[in-house]
Structure formats: structure tokens, C-alpha cells
Length: 253
Image 1: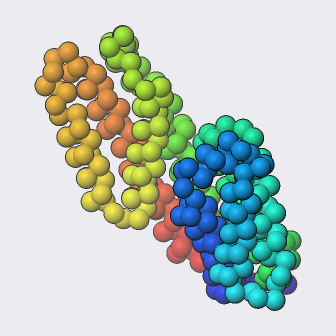
Image 2: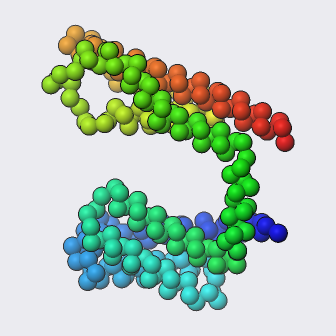
Image 3: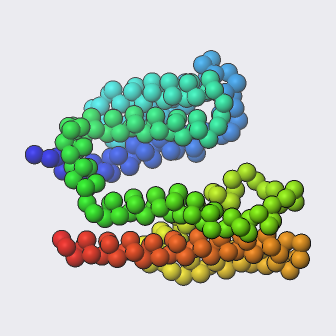
């Protein structure tokens, strides 16, 4: 029989995550991080930081009889942060470090709730198999990757007109701006917060209003606005389509 994850179990997981976030972000200043990267394994802050992580996890969970918890968190914390300090402080190393911490937290949580991993996986699999999950996954994949490629091909003729030394900007900035705006719009449509979409359109138009009056930058601004409108339209229509699928799947229950 599949073990049901009850509210208390989820509250315990959230408390473990909160304990980690407090120690890793609120109690850890930039100077302390730099000290750890400079001294690496001999940094005293590395071990103080690990001890704090273990103590906070122990206190916030309130599992006083689980003596192993603070020690596991302590050892895993200094191991993850010590390995991270051997490399460069990049976005990639940050994400890998946080992922490692989350995996340890999830492992501790499974042991604390006395859950069988195979049973928890079965429970999650039953949720993942639902239509609404795959409809959401499909929608976000489309707005992040295929939509951006298609917009790039559609606007390519205009892009050739503005390419030049003066049109150089941040590398791949337009790519990431487009992805983020489509993700936001799709999310707002699914949440039925259409008024926020109008705010985004207005904000981006105002941002470019001064440039459109400059004849030397008019083509560049128009090119950006065309790409923006296409991007917004794709995200909005895809959001409406996905919302329809979710509604139909809800009626079928």
C-alpha cells in the first residue's frame, strides 16, 4: 500500500528547508563566503557554518530523539561547501551546491517520516502521470525553447537591417529576456491575472519610448517591439490553450 504523505510530513520538510535557508543565506555574509573560498578546508567559518546548519535543523524539526540528524547535516554541509570552495564561485557551482544540500535534506526527511523510498516514488509517479502535469510541462518547454527559436527565424530579416557595431548589447540578453517574459506571461494567464500582462506590455513600451523618437535607433526599437509582441502573443495563446486542457481534465474526474 502506498504511504500517504500527510500534512505533518510536509511541514517537517518545510522546516528542514527553512533551517537551511536561514543558515545559508541570512546568517552567512559575503565576507564569510569569501573567507571560506580563500582558506578553503582550513577556514574556521566552514565548520562553524556546518555546526549552525546542524543545530538549526535539529531545533526547527523538534525531533529531540533523533540524535543523528545534526551530525548528518553538519558533515554534509562542510563537505558540500568545502568542495565548492575548491573551485570558482559561479552560478553553476552555486546551483550544484544547493542541489546537494536539498538531496541531503530530502534523504533526512524520508528517514524522519520513516518512509519507504519506493512507496514515495510510487505516490509521486501517480501524480506525475496526470494530464495536467504533462500539459504544464509541455507549455513551459514550448515557451522556453521552440517559441524562442521560431521568433528568431521570423524576425531574422529585420535583424539583418540593424546589425552593426552600434547594435551590440549583452551576450544572449535578448534570449533570456524573451524566455523570462514568456514564462511570466504564461504563468499569469494560467493564474488568470491578465491585468499583470497589461502592466508588462506598458512597462516595456515605456522603456523603449525614448528610443523610438531617435531616428538612429528607430529600426532597432521597432525590431524589439515586434519580437516582444510575437513573444507575448505566443505565451498568451499557449496559456489559454493549456488552461482549456486543464479545465477539460478537471471535468473528466
